[in-house]
Image (tube, rainbow, N blue to C red; front, side):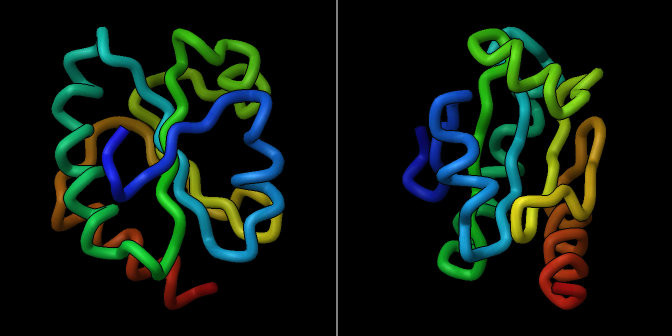
Length: 111
């Protein structure tokens, strides 16, 4: 786990994501995926840049298959933004740092 994001499991997803008072972005990924390995440093960099403005979280799709299915994650990496317990935006596939920052800014401004 990086200091700028939290690891989430099915047991604490509702508490840490759905019940959060802040905007939350959750990345669904796995260490075995080359696409996720490319996305990981981009996600970490953005999570460090926006620390305190929103919550960044990670779900390991291999360990949390039920949670992954519950949120209809059909490809990895997938990043889902949550506000007040509801999904408000979804990104599928690799998104490089600058574009991811623009997406985060857009969601923050719209929230």
